[in-house]
Length: 542
Image 1 (cartoon, one colour):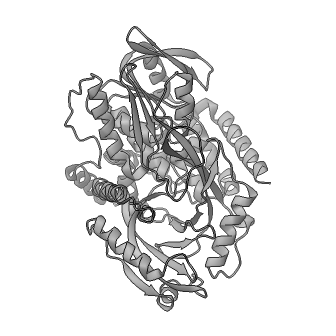
Image 2 (cartoon, rainbow, N blue to C red; image 1 turned 120 degrees about the vertical axis):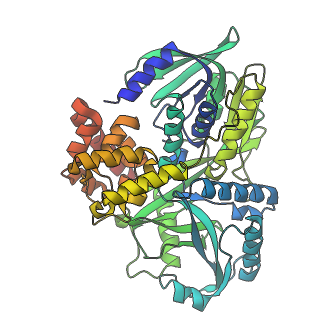
Image 3 (spheres, one colour; image 1 turned 120 degrees about the horizontal axis):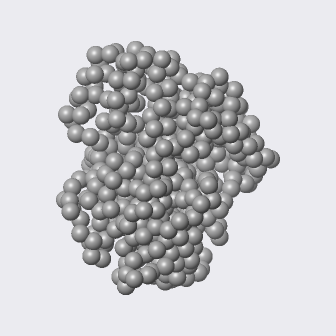
């Protein structure tokens, strides 16, 4: 099935590592990518799939934190804007500028022009890296985007931020894939049961969640990057920290595409929080909510759905109001918010997503709290500095571990793609040419995929209708992306289950063949497992 995972499980048991990272979300992924590229012997495990929790339930935005201007966190906004620009420069095919068209209702807590002045400050703090903001009358907003209900709009504005062209989980996984290429031994569905410090090293007792087999991993340093589960893991490992997490639940609803505009329509919801209508390929993503919850496990409630539907129906002029029947998919995750001390209700206006890393020097143990995808490169660099301070030598400490391949690789790929007229093979349902998509998703690995198509044109066939994934891409996922369940592929390596209705996926003639490519002899069992998951999710919605 997943030979890479099987091989890595064996290596985890028989290798002594410099660093063991627990958690394969964005913080763990960049930590592994940075350390491995700089020559550190790294192990990475996650109790579920990589990017399987918070890191696959975001708004798919890489933004500079404009909302934190209201709470006067100018230092944080400045840092996040700088980080956003750095991401856009480093990943020009993936992290792209997008315009936000914002409408301000009459009676809002601040005048529209005053908020517009804030966008100018935001642009300034963003070092003029994006297009400048513009102030808009309600009439101008209606002319630009007829779908917006401007009846109670006083005015608005446009400004720029960034978004992830592919989904957030795919972006995170590419860091995992990069870390593996640099020698990291990574495995999903491996949970840390407990870890003890023994003879100056960590001995972690772990469990393969697929087989039930338990074994030990040895490492000099342990990094707790378990996202919303950092506190729980610290308690198991008897670690006291300065910070801890509180949780905010956010949900998004995925519905059919509401407008051809490629702008993010931004409003303030009834509770005063920012509310987005985000283009996502053939669909629209709407949200988000912001509800304090007591633990990381959350689900979309009827009240959550109704809140989002009520807000979008109120703020858009739709021919037919959106209802539960229009929902293609849902995203629900908790934001782990880092605060000092213990207990207490969080002030959601004041609390931000900035990260914190607590270090136990005696135990050689790091805990990463909070954080945003926008700031991920800084997290990777900071972890490298902290690991160095704990005594681990980075043989290639100045090596650049992030970013797209250099221009020579890109030119080679583009030249080969033109020679074989790759774009002519683009499926009619695709939202973009194959050349752009292959490069963005696979980088230098796309060159080998071109050769496979050249040798066998059938590999350019679309197996799942409207999925934008060819046979060669599914083969690549089977070989190199540690797909362990069908949901891993449909929801996180790709965004198929976010943009294609589940009934269409299950009825696709090529789904069984895709399972055979991904799982071999286990294809039917994995397909049945996915059907059970879908049935459970449908039941939970009722």
